[in-house]
Image (cartoon, rainbow, N blue to C red; front, side, top):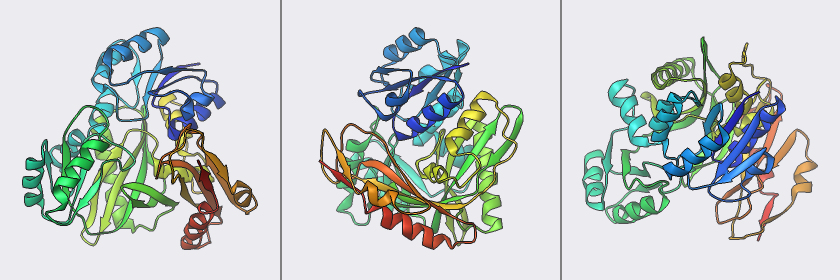
Length: 387
């Protein structure tokens, strides 16, 4: 069986580690702090600064993995090319990890090289450059660090007074050591979707049924599957997703985000790994959840088909206070509900708006999706994260 070095050990990494252990793989979980969620279920762990190339080299040499699986952005990803030369498989590929861990690389690939429809955008390395970028794309506009996740550092500029605050917030929320932001025109969309796209070695690209989601502060609050998407828009999104994942190469699951507008489909972002909105697949909406699909693609285990089994929704459980020993109340209320489940991630500390868990709801395919979304939202409010 294979040894997998998991770089990043949050809730997504934890579910991936569980899926890997179920079929006998060895997982070494890595993160910048002890007792991260995936470390709690891994065979071994390392605590390092993954932006330190020498430290990365050290643990790769120590563990001699067959696969390196990135789960977060803050990694010295340029080292991946050397690991590939050593015969280690980087998931999905060194190129994919490098391009998608930095919004600049993936956006330029999508818009300039592949010609995909995206929002008008500019880059800025200072508050002054941000001012010029805002003038170019117009207001309202969205500012994001080039390296961040879960909405950290993201804000909307609506007036001139917002520009300086947006710059400072983006710098504070940036992951890694790149002090640069992207400012993009606000797209008038009627919905957002995540299209989980699975690339395989010597097999066709597969797509999961589209996932709808709602965001606040740049971070998802609820997701549901399937999202309502016209055949025309779904075909357009699948075509874009296949083009960009083919250009990046490798095998694995990508979370590709799109805006759906009256003017068609706009490419938004891409993650080279299971996606937070894809946690709805833990509600048994599909025959394989997104973590199992990622693992099977990596290991070249056949995936004969992806089928929609139920409709489902997820809603996040958020902390409201800082704590070094969070506890939970209300779980028994969630457990008493039919067709409902939950996950607590086991994060050792909490802070306001930190995602600490998720509730999962499903029902038959005939049930209106709006009912399931509302049930998930209400169920999530039953759980309290205590300091």
